[in-house]
Length: 232
Image 1: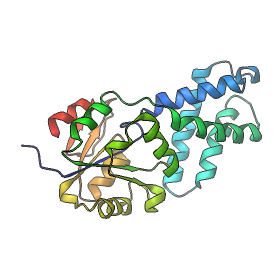
Image 2: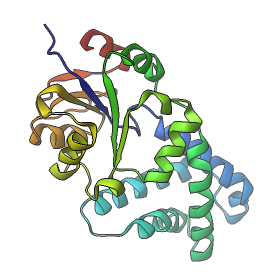
Image 3: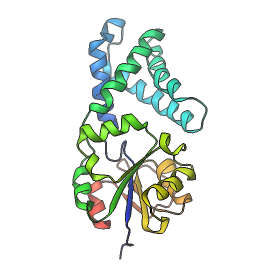
Image 4: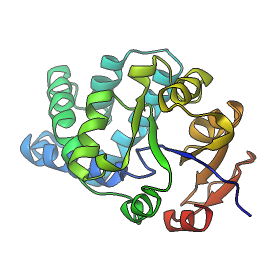
């Protein structure tokens, strides 16, 4: 028999909100509006691949405290442009500002995200724990139509900590008036969402749609969100 939980804590990006597709759509808008093709960037897919690479690397540095938020935001654009021999700091800053205006208005969710939230609503207290920025994440929830499902939004800004550090999980329990024994974390990042929650004494669901190999021991592992209906 599955354990009885009272509090479900979801990650947002890549778990419920389809970051990759929404990010690609946002960057494609900028690619067209700023005529980046005329700057010699002929292949949008290559541009998006470069952005994703640098974004992931800079987020890792940000989580470890090596860089600040503003540096993360503009430098991912600057490094992306440099990959195509476009050395334009002003353009990088413009793209960064415009991207952050467009991104949270995108509405694509991971398949079955709204379905599982509807399934769990009223039966559990549902919360979010995200390393994303407060205003951006709230806008994502509003535009994608899922804000109403969540009791609490715990961000790294609000908690002054980031997954996988234990402080953000302790903050989340206090904010939600919950205890670890009745809580479970659902997320896609094995060393951020899952390991962090395990170290905090929580049960976990590892959402692993790409079958990433790992040596962690989540309580559950799924490849599709609809599998959560068998757990909850």
